[in-house]
Image 1 (cartoon, rainbow, N blue to C red):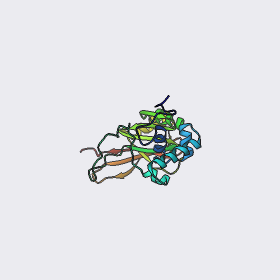
Image 2: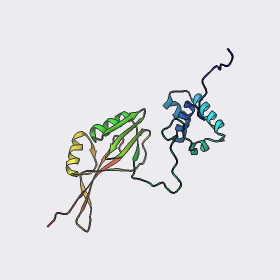
Image 3: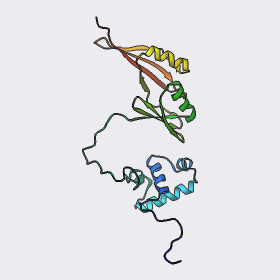
Image 4: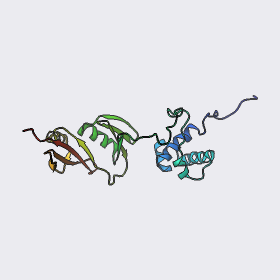
Length: 209
């Protein structure tokens, strides 16, 4: 029949949905093999989409693609006006990232032992709320990472409760500093399931009189 086209319908965006999905993973720093595993497709399929995206965007390298700030048309940010240069201001820290060798075990530990509110999990990623700051866990080989310090009101009570839930403490609560006004800084260190340090922290104000 004349006037008809075979194959997939044309897209009204510069990249197809599959290409966009792969490009977002590239911009996040994943390798082709990691992308293939996340998407459940072959390595050749990922390479095909990367090559197509590079060709459509007129780019010569993966490094260029990773720095490209394009937005897919159906994104919630697609129709928003860009912030003018000089107007952007940093807000509070919104997320802290940490790796875990076993994401299922880590999810259970942070939820059941530490008691952090679990936000959501998809694939090898799990997210928790830490009093307004989001904790992002990603399955991978643990390495040297920042220590997470959790503020608590009563550090001895928190220490006893977490220890009872199975947290492995390497130090009891102890004062690390005494401020000039008499305020005490207290900390207690414990390990996550991969043996990396976490800490409780609290302040104790000097009693009046």
